[in-house]
Length: 315
Image (cartoon, rainbow, N blue to C red; front, side, top):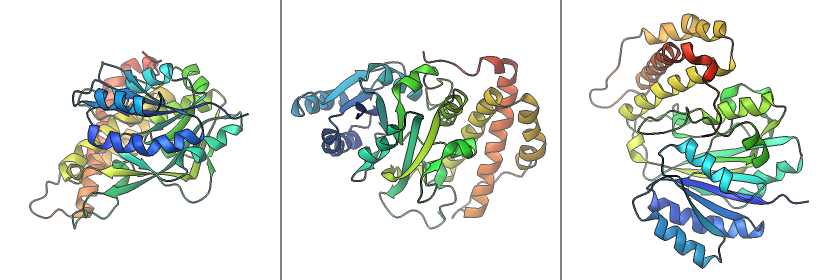
C-alpha cells in the first residue's frame, strides 16, 4: 500500500525562489497525489499571496501554513503537525528538484523500519564562484553527497545525517521522538545547524532506520553572498556551537570534554586569518577550523551545566 505523502517547503521571505520551486514540485506531487505544504515563517514579501494563488490554480493541492515565531525548526514542527501525509518530504525554498526526486525519496519507506531518508544536494552557482574557491568548504553550503549507492546511515558517523534541503521523514516517527529540536537550526539571526543530526540520533535510539538515497537529487541555489570568508567564518563558529549541543545531548560528558583537549584546543589556539586582497583557500579553511573550534569550546562551556535538558521536544 502506498503511503500518503506531503511535500513540506519551509520558507521565509524567499518569494523569488519559492514560486519556481512550487511550480516544479506540483507535477511530481500530482503523480503521488501528494499535498504541498508551504510553511511560512512570518514572511513579509508577499509570499502568502502567491501561495494562496498557487493553491487555487492547483485545485487545493498547495496549502499555506503559518508559524509566526521565527525559527526554522519550529516552522518545520508546525508544518509536520499540520500535514496529512504519512511521509513528509522536506525540501528547502532555495532548491530545485531533479526529475523523479519525490518518488525516489519516498520509495524506501516501503520498508516499515525506515523513519528517515536523505537524498543528494548538489550546488548550483548563479555565477562562477570566486577564483579562490576550491570546494573544500562545500559542506557549509549544504552540499550532501555520500556516493552513488544507498547507505544505512545507522552505520555511519552522526555528521553523515541527511540535510534538511532534501530529506523525508515518517510523520509518526518524527512526532514520536518530539519533532525537531528547537535549540538547533537557524533562528533569530543565529545560524545554528545540526537539527537533522540530532533528530537522526533520536530516531536511531528509538529503533528506527535512517537511509541515504543517492538517486533523489536537488540543486541548492547558492547565494553569492555566502562565497565570502566572513560569512564562512560565521557559519563555522555556529557549526561548532551546534556540535557542542549535540555532543552534550548524546555522548558521555567525558568524551565531549575530551574533544576539547585532544582535538579542538590545538585548532582554537591558531593565529587568526583575515584576508587582505585575494583570499587564500587553504588559510580560509584553516580559519574556519579555528572558528569552529572556538564555537565548540564556548558551546560546551555554555551548555554543559544544562546538558540534561538539551534534548527537547517540539514546542
